[in-house]
Length: 595
Image (cartoon, rainbow, N blue to C red; front, top):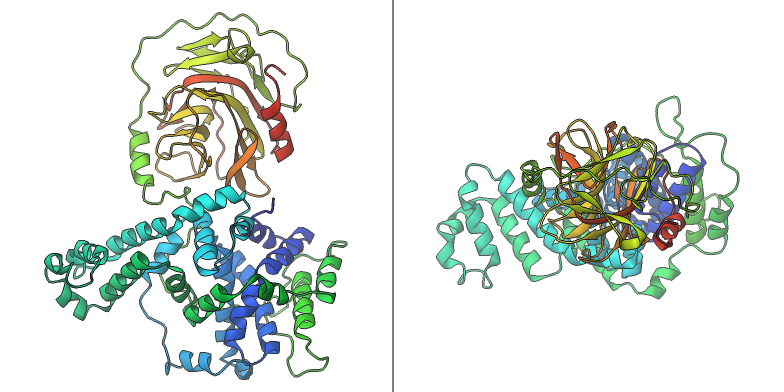
């Protein structure tokens, strides 16, 4: 399975051969679209090729300097426009088509001074929903192509695509309410009512209550009502392209929607261009990515030269032609001001639900039930070699208590032995098992796996976690709000901060044993959730703190108190100090009990 665009972008801003390879792959994925938009900005095919090359390099540089983690396609297309704006200020203006300079000078369609609510709503979405939405409604890509950009299985891409437009409308409503000024605030609810009406004037007349007069004097609310109605009545692809590209988004969207597979294939570099890119997979260059000249400008790196070679071969630019290599410059953004661009992707698909969930979790406390005597400390029977060796901890629960690990553990309250799976632990919602010290290093690579069987889905329930001072460093759990298995990792040791999370593609099956694996890959800054050996979802996470408390099974920690206590069976818990690959995870899920 391909890695996501965002993972490639994060690698591209590093140094060394891996960065060049990631940049080349990222450029190859988006070259067709970048050329299509560059062609709309320029007067000749040769100029479009040079503009595309400069924009691809600028997109990587801007990602590095601004720290924006966002959907790559609109980001790199925005770099095309920003580079064209820079060209319009010097002698390269002659390379541009007539329409763009006219638009920039204000004789056609000037840039709006006010931020677009739709742009703000788009960037409020998690990155994966931005990608799913853009490639589905703007690019009209096939599900397999959307999945490639997301770096997930086709089923996950279809799931995110199905909900992306409704999430955008929800985010738009939130931004509208948050940004309404004193004069607009009283009309926000009326505006939403009018937008939901099936007939613009007649059906909404009884609810407007002075809205018409306000709309006549408020361009911002008028535009919001127009956008809400367009999102209600039609797919939002053209609307998004207009909002995020600023110039000729409609033309770009129509061109992308009308292309067919043969046309797309014809425009991809072939022959010498592809061979040139493949030859770039040789020895790493001696210098790192994006070297600077003495005046502080970035120079074209090896990957940019590969891109330029591919472009010029495709365009058949004659040697000695009139177009010189484009200069790579630092450009101001054309994006409207005050648009919230997340520095890390927020929780998956729940921008409007996070507050309610956090409040519910902060109010959680363990159920007040009497203590039960702990099970007898009889040792667990010996087991054969691990299916995946090298575990730092393994609790098999084949006997009455946890199998000794490093460090050993103890049972607290309601945990009893069960005969299921040749020996497992049964939790009654009041008890848990904890180690006598930290096991996983939450700032580095780790993998945690376990078999789990839910008996109810009424509450959040944690299978495995590791304590910080106030919250767990990670939660491998059932999430009630989404009715999904969930891997969540917080940005700090605080219940007030947000979490990155990855969700299962389907709800858990109550009463059925399922294998869960949580992986954190520190090199890729990525968390991964597997269910029954199959990758479900990934999310970006950059570690910022270390949870140094006990490793726990059957509970988490929230605001310094045990929480999310588990009700059901747990078996064969393992912790590895490395990020296991897909084959090892599948081996764990396929291993027989006690093996």
